[in-house]
Length: 258
Image (tube, rainbow, N blue to C red; front, side):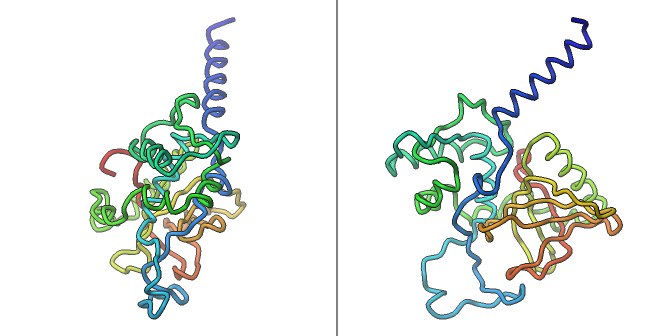
């Protein structure tokens, strides 16, 4: 075998091993079944203070950064064994912490080193059955307000920075990794939110790149982010909690202090 052919063969085998150890992210398998609830209630994307019984009920809020990060950590560092019996709450908490205590930007673990969660086929199934245990142990929301990377929404608003982010997003997805993005319209606060971008969506529109997104406010189905090359800007899908349109996006959890 000549050297060139040997190199190509080794590369092909390496890609095959990586693909086997890190299967494609699937929304119906690799996301949380429960929602990150919003602090405010919304009407056509406009926020209002909650009133009455809805304001007083136990609610899981301010965790969009936490759930986007944790979905990526489970994708990289955990696997599931549906044939084995489920863990007790105490043992489940210990294994959740083994996953969430690993830095999200680290490379995926080999399959035989991943933290095993018995009793469930995937993260979505486990979060349906043991949602409260997960909610209480994947992380608190308030520290995300003080993340060092948040400063960029003030000091890095340029179109050039967004073009760089767009290129980095494509590169991240092309190598089979995930991209957690902080969406903002600062100084307007129509959105201040974190999502997990996990795939490009085929699209024939000239100058438009579309992406599939796990948004923890909307656990029922993927949402869409897109990049307009003519306008050199990102935009996010309209829904009850966002009026839709232009956003700036900053990668988070891609490296230390980001």
